[in-house]
Image (tube, rainbow, N blue to C red; front, side):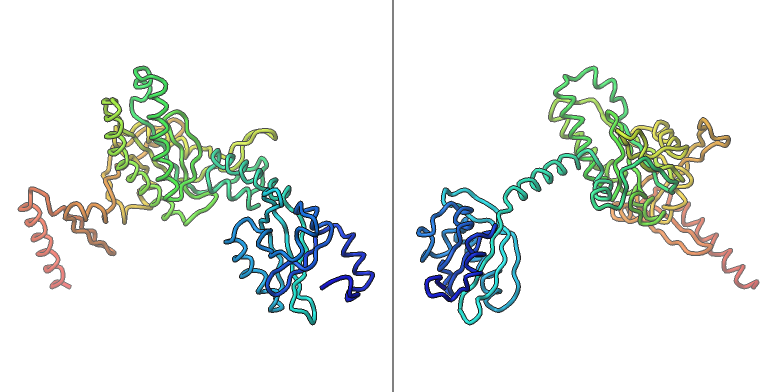
Amino acid sequence: MNFKNNQLSSRFKQVFHNTGFGIMIVDKNRNLIEVNPKFCEMLGYTKEELIGKNAEILHISNKTYKEFGEKAFNQVRNNKPVNLDWPMRKQNREKIWVRIAGDPVRDKDEVLWTVVDITERVKAKEKIDQLASKLSRYLSPQVYQSIFSGKKNVKIEAYRKKLTVFFSDIKGFTEITDRLEPEVLSTLLNSYLNEMSKIALKYGGTIDKFVGDAILIFFGDPETKGDKEDAYSCVLMALEMQERMHHLKNLWEGQGITNPLEIRIGINTGYCNVGNFGSENRLDYTIIGGEVNLASRLESNAMTGQILISQETYALIKKHIVCEKKDEIKVKGIAHKIQTYQVVGSYKNIAQKRKILNEKFDGFNLNIDLNISKKNKVITSLENTLKQLKKDEKSN
């Protein structure tokens, strides 16, 4: 297409030359046959440097040139609309971003492209994305996603919700800090928190905060799978954290830290106040309430390497998790004593490591460790039970 043959109206010529966006026209071989002044200004070329050249000189690589042909040029020639953001290369080799739209030229095997420079907009978005990525490290992924998706308002508000709350710390960590150099201590603590965080995110836990070596995690907000599944996920997370500690202890021993490091864990389920607490200038998404305090007390009462849970949590996970009944504890602010249970492991994992026979249905609960040393006692007990069942069956 050429202006000299008067194929374009004088009005279009005026728009073509004076418009605020770039225009280029290419033939079926993607050779440039016409460009307007704005396009030349945008790409840093003169008109003479572009006319007759293949459009490949405008792309940052041969690969992107071919990709553009597939995604855009061929689509437009088939009368399909195209409007996309695309990188281009200026005459001085500088990369810019453009928003480009194409239309086929009627009765001609040519394509007219309109081009707008959006480089500054793209750079601004990249800066925002980088900043958002940095900020996301200060928030639990669930909270970050809820805020940036608009699901949560960034204002002072809280609500009651049933959560499963997890507390943990490293037994004797305070004493360890007095013996280690600050650099060694930082490496140890960061490696521990990093590994524990990975496990928490794997199971969908919301990481509330780190306080030194202590970790507060909860399940049930901003997303929940249901009370039972939240509690079960929390306990599975705690079990995997225990397993990971064996690996970390070996790693630390290789660094000369030979003192035994063990974590203790407390878990409780109940209604808590969850939401944004603080001031208009500084908010903290966290949980408060008596059930949170109980989880903390369970953790402080746990022995090293122990996972101690409340009756409420036990009731939700007992069909899947092997637990041992432990002592009752007295908690400030609660009139009655709290029954505690120690988590041993999941039936599934224990069965893989040990021979466990487990069967449950209404009115029947059988759980036998087939590796038990006193097998004769178990056999006698089962035989007596079977005799009693047969006797009752006959009497009925």
